[in-house]
Length: 237
Image (cartoon, rainbow, N blue to C red; front, side, top):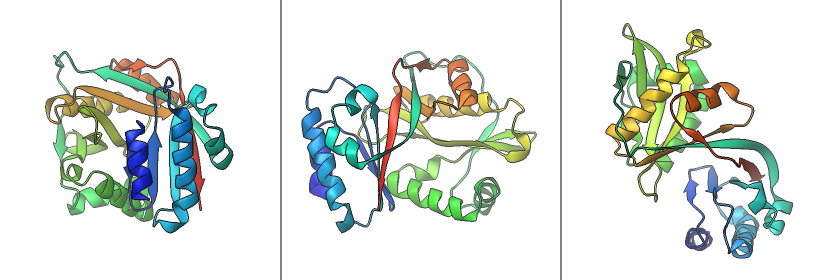
């Protein structure tokens, strides 16, 4: 399994994995080695039963997917996402709302997530984040505060094995504050931390194509939408 993952990395496929899933992504639709990638992913699917992982997730542009015929037959299309990017060549000359960084192990942090996600989803979420981003997990939990009351949480991080590409692992508003326009500020806090504290050179964000509120938020915060969307596929045992 590790041999196959290394071959995919050498072929230009970024890889993340946690205790449950292997995540593959390609946002470039002009690769010349699509047949090689197709063969490696096909072999990975054939060998997944020998691994502790139960699911393979893959995202790529539709134009590239059409060249991955073997893999396409075995994986199920589960959605479509829109990509947004932002370069951090210029520093933010803005003020951001008050926020705090909590330890992921603090009782108040766990309680806050439990109330937003539920216990089962929170436990799986924390395990995934810890295994995917072990060196960053303790500085990601960023809480947006209004009058010292937590409004929402955002988890900025640097994507491993990239040139300081910033991403947001998850973003969420506490239920009673949904629909009040706080999402833009929460996302802005994440961007601010990425540039100023994580030293990101750029940001890449993705959201489901039907998620119009999040698309509006990223556009409002100066992110540029890519022309082509990406197709999300899944293979599970």
